[in-house]
Image (tube, rainbow, N blue to C red):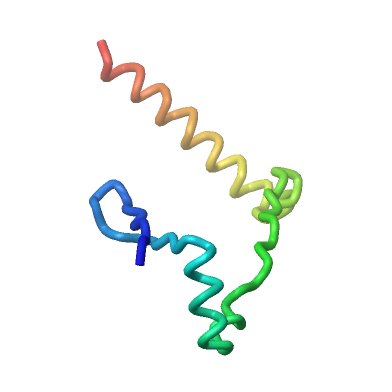
Amino acid sequence: MNVQYLSDAQGRHTAIVIPIEEWNSITAKHEDLKTLEKPMQPTIQPKPSDFRGSISKKTADELLRYTEQARTEWGNTIS
C-alpha cells in the first residue's frame, strides 16, 4: 500500500493519506468503513462582535488597564 504520513513539527505522525484507488478497494471489501466518509463541514470563523457582552465592562476596563501597564513595563525593560 502506498500511503503518505503527515507529521507535526516534532516529527510525530498526525495523519495518513491513502490514495483514493486504494481507499475505494478497501471500502469495497469492508462496507462498514463507508461510515467514516463524512462530508467536511466548512469552518465558520467567529467575528469579534460574536463575543460582545461576554465580559462585564468593569472586567474589560481592568484588562485594558493591565494591558496598558504591561506595555509600559515592556518598553521600560528594553533600553
